[in-house]
Image (cartoon, rainbow, N blue to C red; front, side, top):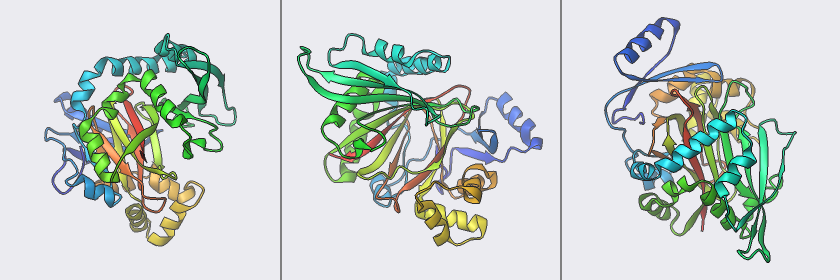
Length: 362
């Protein structure tokens, strides 16, 4: 569900105290109301209608221009095919929130797999969001030799805020502090295979001919989907404005598998202009601040992440996307100064499930 000049599938409302009754009445009549409350800040609400969502008209042109590519229902049939695996992963996240051991959950999923062997666990006490990181080695099927080492799965909270119960699991390899994953050495293929083994619903994305064909055309040749992250965004939580412009990563595929997430997504150049208009400042100064090594803070942080009137301005400009099961959102990244910035709202009545895959030239 995206807002654009072709007409949208929702109305956006500021949720002031005197409009709470209006939302309740809409719910009583069977309307779908998604409240955008993230970590205690009320940004408004979406009242979702019956019109089908409007996809990006020219996906390849949008990708090349560094703009979000919205692909509603692209994966709906594949979500239905992998419904059991999706449900199993949702239940796993429920147990993890209730205190289940991460190792027990992953061990149960790998079962008697002869390739992947548990090699240890760590907890980084310098990173308060991290819960646990599990290391996995790859053995030959006969166990005679080690084929790869230091693959890992990391369970962490998405936010530092205890009100946000959103979780994520990233699958990667090597030393995270030195960003080994930016210099592939063959372990990226094993990392992807580990993700496939632990989360069979990865096939929703990797097995979609429509999606992979589009990405092949966008990159002009072979590619790989790596650095997989499995998200369970909780109602009232989500991610603040950020980008994924890492060296060598050409973009990100976000696939919604269960529940709903609501996104604000737009190119850096336009975000800078929107902030400048809103704050009566210079777009060049905003752009410089957004490109600085440290994340935005102070007044800029407040505008991006905790100003409902700025959220409303972005919605009016057509930069809001509501993703339901089977919808995909592509976020191209042509470099730090030419990429899509985005933020995410967890909404609905229960935590959602989604996969994020980094796009790399193959």
